[in-house]
Image 1 (cartoon, helix red, strand yellow):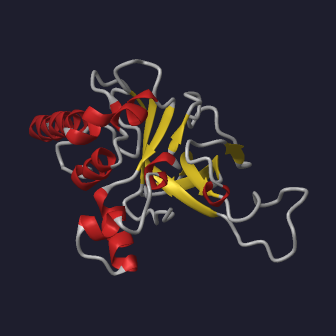
Image 2 (cartoon, one colour):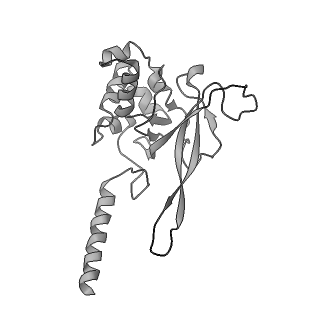
Image 3 (tube, one colour):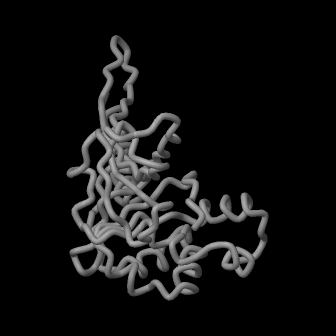
Length: 216
């Protein structure tokens, strides 16, 4: 019995250390929600290099200051950029730059720093982004998810919420003035939420790697 207890204790210690090393995980974990870095530097110094191409796009359109000053930023990853390039059938960034504008980034920037999971509702709420284009209308909502733990004699289910960036197609779904045949809005989940960057007034979220970008 003593050997068994020691073995379990070792496993728990290892698990605890592992959880603390991987910050900003989707499950919320033990991550700290504050970073001493700016939005731009957080992306540029990401240890898994998920934003290297995103940073090049920000630089090309001279948006570093905008990215750092935004109240909320829904950052997309290089995986989404690759998917966009594939859909546009381009192979270089120069080719990509000839087909998009700075609104590719600014549609994910907002003045409001209070766009958080805690403040979101299950009904989508529209927010004005910095693209200032009718083709880039956006909203935010949260959706409820569940996960099940399979135990020996039971399987309890637990609920949690994820933040969703909503690309509005036409008008916001379920709006009183929604016309017949309006295209359904697209909801994109966040894999990371609620990171407070260096100035303390900016909230950074990261969209899922599978996010489909709105080409503008």
